[in-house]
Image (cartoon, rainbow, N blue to C red; front, side, top):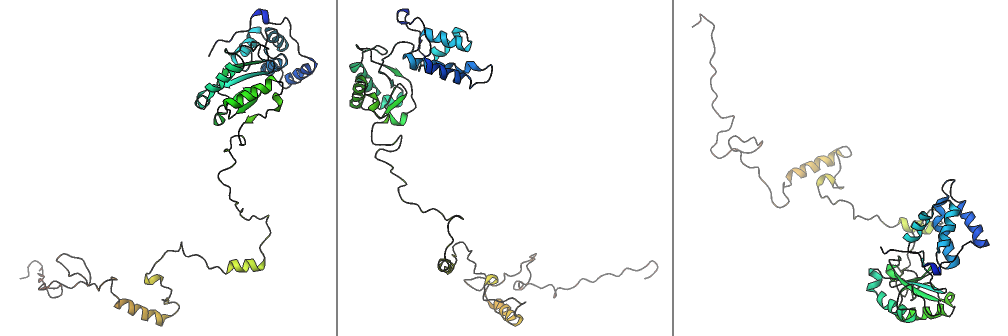
Length: 313
């Protein structure tokens, strides 16, 4: 950050005082803060002093310090820290602050500075011959989407071209700066697209709420005649879920017939399946034995030896 110093002694006024209107405003501003916190009004009071004289003088800094019961150095620290406080005389009709941060620089801020050098003075903070205009380069002013832009006093002028800035400077020099509309200098509102909105132009019908009138009987009947959708219903062709099959509780005879029909159906949908032959050690139930194998019922049984008590032959 560059070093900011007060103006030379030869341009400093001897005294400073608020006029009647600003004096009433200053007292009302100080009363906004709790007791013991009146020093918080230092920034608004300095800004009002700048608006009255055009820049912040040493006398104004001392006046604000005495009014808020602050050391001079504390008020000087505030005035030299914030670049919105002008510490030297500036143009009486316009002081142009050109944003030189990256977005504005990429969009042509250097060309705007050349216009200021040509129309006002080669050096920043230097007054023109009449003392009505001055300019400086500043950091980001918060309108990057509308770059490049300048600020004149409290108003921002955005989406500038060198030709448009020349017209604005000429208007302020002629005392007609109030005729220039602040904000974007092209056909758009604030930061909206140029030429108006480009999306969401279709009319959207809002969803009906409880505040809307209820539909008529004919409309309700027409809406009820629409069958429900089957999109989310699972598709299952298993016999258990077939609505044509009846349960034994409702029709025992039909259920018995359905059971017999199910026994005759193959297990697979493609071909009739047969149970695999039982292999030795297999626990499959109902499977036929292998060819040549002896089933469990035909195996010879081992004779159980009968034990005898001692003494019997």
